[in-house]
Length: 144
Length: 136
Image (cartoon, rainbow over all chains, first blue to last red; front, side):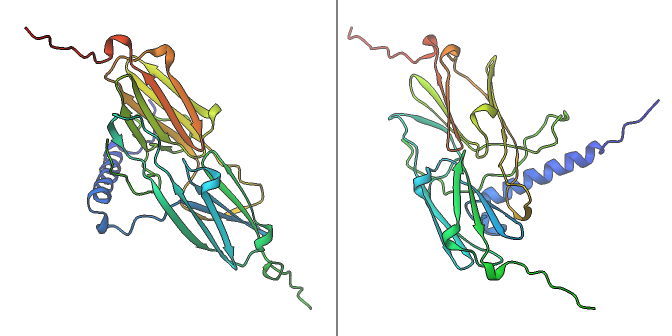
């Protein structure tokens, strides 16, 4: 005889219910929850010298994305255009959105605007932003 | 036909239900947002799958169940640590039950800028035929 350690079914069922309720509330009473998350969704990575920002922007062409850097503020803006749809098409589902977007991100330190590089692949925008020399961390010697 | 457009929204981080089965991969599974529309001849599916790539997408049609799955990953250079996160790598999976009969040999799929577009031609017998009523 042996037992497997597993989450009891009731908890899994409750998690599922909670997810379903959250989904219902956000869909029909968006005002009950906080405002819609900013578009696009971003991740920020960093090391000592550089910030690395990635954003999920599917369905947009690279030339329709604008990037602006000023001090420590990065602005990603652009537009996702509606798809070309054959005439007399009938929609069964329409979950994808279209339109203009703009998002400003305050980075923890100022960056060298001239050295910012960006790539766009498979709907993912990756931006490398080197920190300003003056903002890079400095090693401080401790004197005895 | 429909002129209503949705606002841009962040991809729902909702996880796909796994039917009580455990998955072998530890990654989370996302349900890609989809548009589905049809014309007389074709059924069209458009899915947002940012971070996936041509080689990492599988489309299967078994009986009348169309399964689309993919793996999303971003190449973050080494030596970075994550300081703020709103999305993550994971798997995409979504299944649709098709009601029309589909011409299986002529399904086309294209992946561009993180969007997957599938064209499913309807089988000859499933196309709607117009029947003209002749005067008596």
